[in-house]
Length: 566
Image 1 (tube, one colour):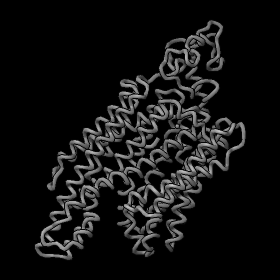
Image 2 (cartoon, rainbow, N blue to C red):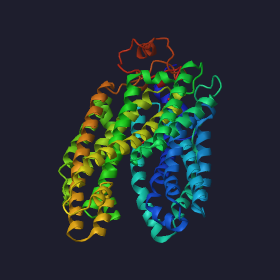
Image 3 (spheres, rainbow, N blue to C red):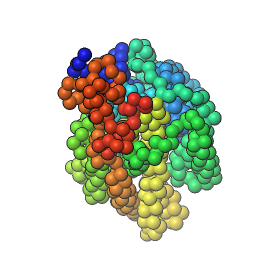
Image 4 (tube, helix red, strand yellow):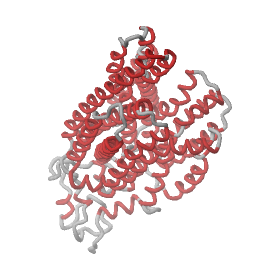
């Protein structure tokens, strides 16, 4: 019996059994929105939390950092656990924990309880993020559809990052600070039953025991490394920074050696031997390194140099978010037209061009220049991240989908932390010398002002008179100079990323079985990849290493089957 059903259609029906895959995408996007909003919503509430709970300096640091630290360190643990016990199961458990932790945080009456609640939110986020990506990988086996789904998914991520501070500000104007957490609960109460009904369950290769020791080693190593990187970003170079970094690196080396020895490893590190996968991970790190450091410095420039309010600063950065959303929605079409190599390289080059354009910023407000620079910056970075994540996700085997998703998310977090540390150090090195010899300003005051522009303004206010005004002008000029140096360093890193992206595949090649090109010669009940009587399927699916496509997609072979945050 002959028919017109293609192998890709059969796989799509099997992957999305029980629910339309686009409805599944909506559920996954809601999950992402919650996690993305919660990562930034607390930033505007810090003054209110400080006034109410009166935490110490160390406690306040942990209130802010507990969520990203715990989330980043547990991504591999829960990503690989989902591959073994079921990705939907881990996702629903993450929903539950996220809701409970949100209630704890909302009604916390002391700093220590809030820190615990924020850490539990990080655990829930680490369960949710890899699971959403690996489920997306499963329900969209067709690469063209998956590229569109990733574009929508990443656009939602950009919205979440921008909505967090705005939502937090709105809630704080009308309610107490705990409301920024309480808003999560009704959304989780809806997501739990809807996810249970609509989301398909999937697992990877369950042969062999789950490596509990390896998972804990990776979690401890990542926690220590991320903690050390964050301390570096704050300018701390003492034992409290170097010891965690050293311990984390040692633990991660031990983790890699353990995985190579095991018959059934937690993570198949052979994925990194594939140029498309390893290059994509490197591009994610470089892109985030540039983005986070630049956003931090840009926010300081807008507020401290141009004198804009926090709300005005947020509104100036909105075009960056909308440009990122546009790039995410157009990403699938660009990927088909340009291919991964040109798309990611073009994204890096656009971003580098935007950064060079922004070096024209000075002490006076130039709104058109900032608008053009931020639009190019948002579009270029999202183009880069989209192409890199899509290539990484398509290259990963389906039975390692959770682990691959966790690697992508961890690369995202590490790139952000390293960016703050590296670009912050460059900024400080270029800023401080300009304050060493300000006429009429004591050496002690100059040394204090060299720490940051905000502190320079405080010192200038205490000095008063001509000396204070001279210090204020010198600090402002030095900050703008440091900003220009930092932008040029960032542009160099982005161009290095464009060169790195040349290792990616030139074209977006899909498995020939996925491309509906007319009536299929095999009967509809024939399994994907099996040889039909006429041999058509065998011709369309050449053996690995002998096909005409430059980049094979192991995720779509019969024996294997795979994981982005933007």
